[in-house]
Length: 280
Length: 320
Image (tube, rainbow over all chains, first blue to last red; front, side, top):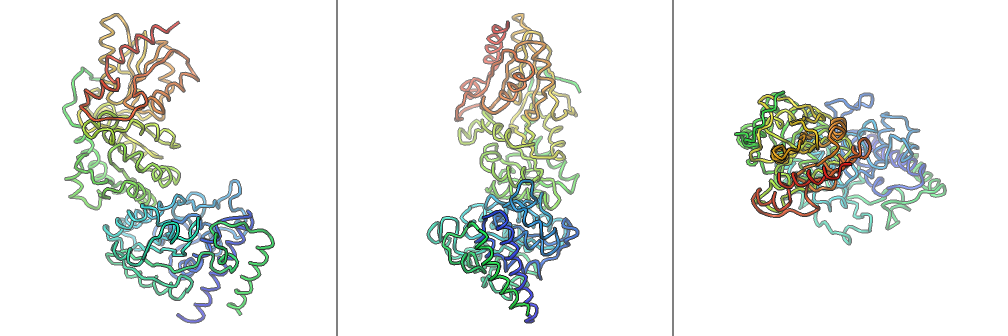
């Protein structure tokens, strides 16, 4: 990857974090930890890998994204706003009455959201059904699925993985956001999931693990899924919950956090400085 | 549409009718698709399904995933029909049907076989008395308790193209023949099987046959009872309910389900709001299921013509 493209993707990831922070600050608190940890993969997906049309969000042959950890909505909304699916200013309506941007992703409300999620595990099955349906319709697209590591406590995830493998859904790419924390603390303390790479391989997936904050590594892993085939793909994203905002990263219980004006100003200042360095 | 009820059973097993109807629907419309959870040999779809593996998707014993896959298929542009036994088609995948299906506006047709006492030898673990109540509180849902094989064919064909979640509860064995072959029943419209002046029975599913037997017995005793097929439990035909309640002044509801949250509660709502008259029910008195023959279980849970007859007499006695 050219340095220029890498820097552009990194800058996009910072902008996604800024947008998510903007949205969460507007309502005073939100699921900031898990929103931050997927900003980099979202930047690569929407900045490089996925085919989509912001002016025609329901275009049938588009690549689809299912964010099964639906509480990461703010990052997804930030990404979609930055790509022109709806006005950036609308991010400030997050969770307000009548908004098109609810805390958990909703396909009937938000332009660009493909699948409704929120009850953990359910996005995984829907993604499998969507990938099967697209395949049966003869579409050449891919379905990308982001699952949380805590979310994978849900047995439904593993039911869907068995199904995807059995039905040879080579158009499905499962990305596990292995950020090591869930609502009550560290995943290794709440319900250890063991070795995701070994598990996904055992479930029949073409599996790699990458540094989930390294846009170049993510891009390379995603590029390898373009060839399709008879095995679904799994990319284990080695991430840090809250990544990109030091104070959030360093807060142990960072699943959902209040964001007051003081924190917002400090964190936004840090992100702006990072962006400036990338874009100079 | 002609009512041909004469007390005889239809010659067909409902299982065969389910299988043939699903195959017909899916073969004729490439945008429909069928899903099962390792029970295709139980609803008559196995042979067809094995010959059409891209049209009939066996999801294995994973009902929650099946419901989610059905929702995903909706997003991809399909109209899915999914089947498993009633308890697994309701309790086992309720959150998935509720959110991935209903809430997300993915229109899925769910067939739950062996409702209530028709689960017989599979016993209490497989005997859903609560499935109706669960689907009742799923917004914009449709609930069908199939009254005869021709009702099943007509309703299933409509459900596939109807918005929202459609839940069809139907046994796999024989049902009494009520409607002529080729009958078309309109979802949401109750059908009067028998007119009467002293009381009315609103019944659904296997309880229609019991209600007709009770009405015939009472006729010999000089009591005139109307029988109405409420195969659509939701949306209830409130006009028909209010009309017959008004005409007769006494109501019995007969259902093969828990008395709470099902047809009885639904009809009491209509009566309370539009036509308050004495009412009673013949339904499961808030109990879990158990194993046995259907005859034994109908007796055990009080779901017979005799019970309906007793309730009819009691409710007529309460008329002012």
